Image: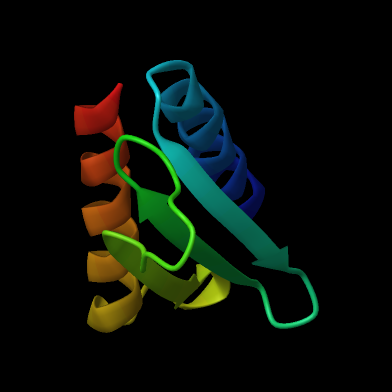
Length: 80
């Protein structure tokens, strides 16, 4: 289940790029965390991400992690 969530997010990040958005994706397998920074309409030097989240894929039973995952998932789907 964890792998599917990571792969789904990565797929959406790549699709968002096709629409002109730069999404920085980082997976840390030793702690099972995903960090995503979304630059809507592209990255600009010195600009912060429009949306930035980090969550742990092995703790989806915790509301905080589940909410972060679902929020990022929904935002990426809106971009594509």
